[in-house]
Amino acid sequence: MMTRSELVRQIQAKKSVLCVGLDPDLAKIPQHLLLEEDPIFAFNKAIIDATHEFAVAYKPNIAFYESLGVSGWTSLRKTLDYIPKECFTIADAKRGDIGNTSAMYARTFFFTYEFDSVTVNPYMGSDSVMPFLGFDGKWAIVLGLTSNPGAEDFQYFNSGEMHLYERVLDKLKGWGTEDNLMVVVGATRPTDLARIRERMPRHFFLVPGVGAQGGNLEDVLNMGWIEGEGGLLINASRSILYASEGKDFALAAREEARNVQEAMEAWMRAQ
Image (cartoon, rainbow, N blue to C red; front, side, top):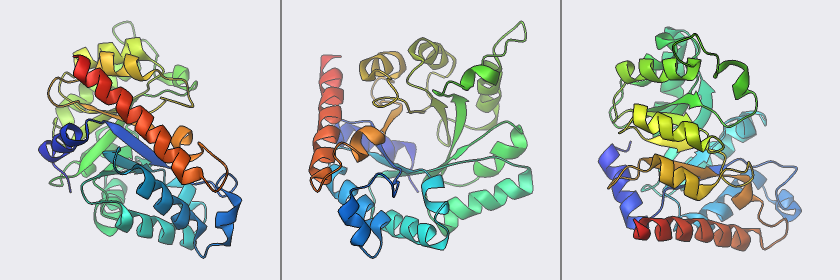
């Protein structure tokens, strides 16, 4: 479990809001790791060793583990046990279902796997979100406005009063608090991010899309920062994980993570 104040202390200590996405793909990880007993964990372990100095959070995308069956869930368990305890952990599972099912998903990720947070799809309304909000030191990170092209299909639907994503955000404010609910906001939509920050001035945002997806780090910091706390977890996955395809992959990942952290620290000092 991790409270807001504990997360803020990590941000202040590391001068970073970097979240590293742990999305190991057997087709992309360095081929020499395939000789390991558990290639997924071997890859994750090396990435964590290389980046934990610069990262305040880690975000395993559950699809990359559950697609491998039992062995994938075992790799996930070992990965979670290895992540330093001071780092915030996110189960990127995007679960969302009726109340009793959501309660089981919450138990899965908060108790069985002991994540600090889980991403949630709010399409089914309060039933799909509220069951994740009753746990001390645990967070629901709810999809708000995403960075993928398909976000245009539904999220920008305008009823005449507001976009659908704005309706979702307004509802979320009544369901959770600034201490147990975060929102996903894509880095590729900085103007919208600024408007969302006005709508939700104190909530933390999980921001994917910086790096391989083309989002700009400085734009996100300018539009989403909360003075004194940060209020952001900016995710980078492929740009760090696959900075090199060779045996120097961990060193390359470290350099990429360091570059991102140093850019964040320089921005903070300039404020």
